[in-house]
Length: 422
Image (cartoon, rainbow, N blue to C red; front, side, top):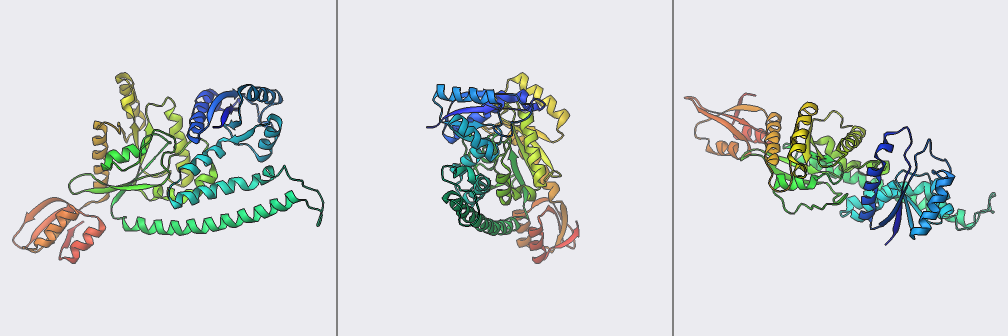
């Protein structure tokens, strides 16, 4: 097992310096998820990063001494390093260096299960690796000069660049095929009202999907990035009203942009949803910062204008006083919100169901149909595939008021129903 030292170096003028301990605690969780043992930490507040080594000279010497004393084999920086910075730190300290982005990519690689997720992670890793190839080949001779004078390191470097460039093109083509297939799948279920679960990693999205859909097979684990693949389940909101809910990959602070780009096909579920359920870990001391991180990623995806319901999860971990304080604050800040505990059959889940039922009914407005007396088949169809609000028998015909999605309405008209009012 790798023995890791975590390095945090926020800028003095940034808000990150106020949360450096919390950020390193999250980095420690990431390291644990990746299988490393954290043996120490080092912090420094910077006016600006050293362009050569990120840290100042004195702190770099302190880091080398600390790594030697603790027997560390790996240095993990909370901020993204340039290829040259990582190379120079490795040479100065004599230990392998990773930054936060590389660590997250490594975790995604071990967590990817489906063929799509593995391709997405591989694409992100290759795009991250491409500008860092030079650092990997420093152990080989590189002779400066023109044609005929290039050393084996440069030759291998050029070969690797060509191979990686080709692999990136292949992966992008395959993911484009996946994107088209996913669009067809979305079109097939477009008639149902749909919600997408979004939120910071480990906020409890999968637990909430399990609670809403009563699907025990939904994988749940109290770890960062427990699930990467989108998972869609049908949820019965009432005897006659159904919807689909999709769980998406969790976000995190400083999520590598290559990863966001690679998972764009998956995250398009967010753009297609009728409403976003932004799941927030109410028990986390910095849930407001996490909320802002998620909203920044959603804005990057073009989902800024989507309707959002804020779902404050894990309220079972709060004291009664904390819960009341949170409820009061939410009433002032978030017009559309609900407090839930996704485990233990909390009443908040029922409140969320009621809220979603109201949104789904708004999505499928009432229509009035006229059908001939004795058309029992059509009446049964309306009860089975719609939400019947009323039936009125007149001398000339039977009039039914119901909520019908476009597909159900089309079937009803084919079976003899006539729209009187919509």
